[in-house]
Image 1: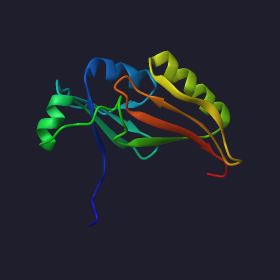
Image 2 (image 1 turned 90 degrees about the vertical axis):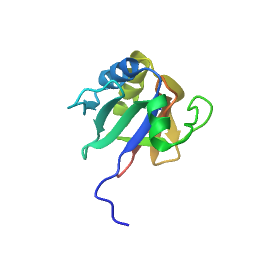
Image 3 (image 1 turned 180 degrees about the vertical axis):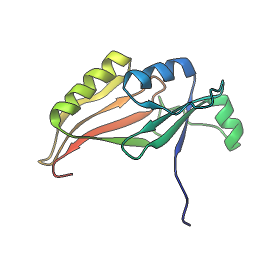
Image 4 (image 1 turned 45 degrees about the horizontal axis):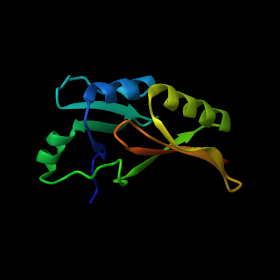
Length: 133
């Protein structure tokens, strides 16, 4: 298998709230064709695509139920920071935008510093500064 591209599709309950949250975090909008079914963002230097579909739309599209992200993890994304200061700054941005800090910024061994947050629909993200990366 050699896919041309990979992206993620996540379920949300409120597109307006999701759009506001990720816009406040500075994610780049990928909504070239506005829709009442999804909002989309480009993440990172290589523009990884994350689509956020209304839950009922995504369940119909995949022919099955979507896990409740507030009760379990379907996937955990990791966002790479350039410094410890940037990790701390992003934690403040997440709080201001209405995200939940699951684990405050802290050291993970000698090489890692980061925190974990959840968006308003419970989707979890690691934020890490990795020394030498």
